[in-house]
Length: 295
Image (tube, rainbow, N blue to C red; front, side, top):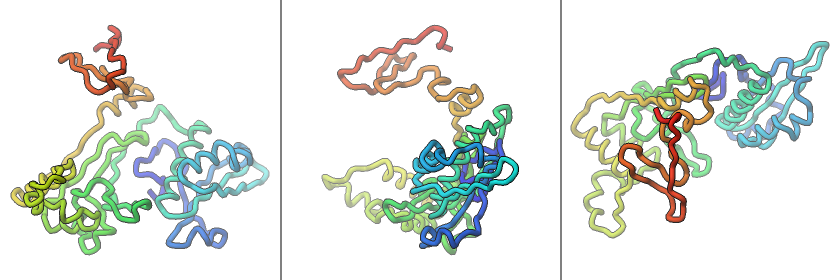
């Protein structure tokens, strides 16, 4: 995150994020624990015009990421000169902005070597992230991910026993160790705000009320409660996105391009059962399978 601004970095090119010592120029943005980081673009001073940086493509990319503006500095010398892009604010917003700019500029300058295959594992995820809208912590993966046992004294800043596999900047697999101790689950539930009404002990007394609707979250909570209560075993796992990997290896831009029978916004047909799912009553419910697309 510190180097690339992303937990699924594309490492096929070398633009890296760096800390900035120019805190005096951005005092307002540092209030409340903000940070300053920069993205240095070699030879970018003359490649990108001031209009592109002030109201053009690069500026718009920064705004799309949630930034309020895009401070920049051009280092002009006898050569082409470097471009330095600044991001100021909360760590997550700074990383989000510079990650988006990093990818956009790499594509603009042709820095990505599309013949390379960059595969890596990402570990030591934080257990929680801050939800700015709701002003609370929420689980980065899901509230049943086990915390690192070395961090149990301060769960709010703990690392998760979770892992992702990344290929060319795209997550193609992820997994974790499930919490298998009930006391750890209770602490995590308290941090993310799972209410006492959602805990397994209260399901039976609420079952007779008209408002007792068993949600998918409730069913997961019940499942994990039984697992922690009676099994007490380690459960590791990982799920791979094979369709996404196939898309990347094929050089396609959409998963629909590599799925034999892709769904659309109206309906989908199972070629083996002949059933139709979804769609409105007024929608035209037909799907045409071209022979060359049937494998």
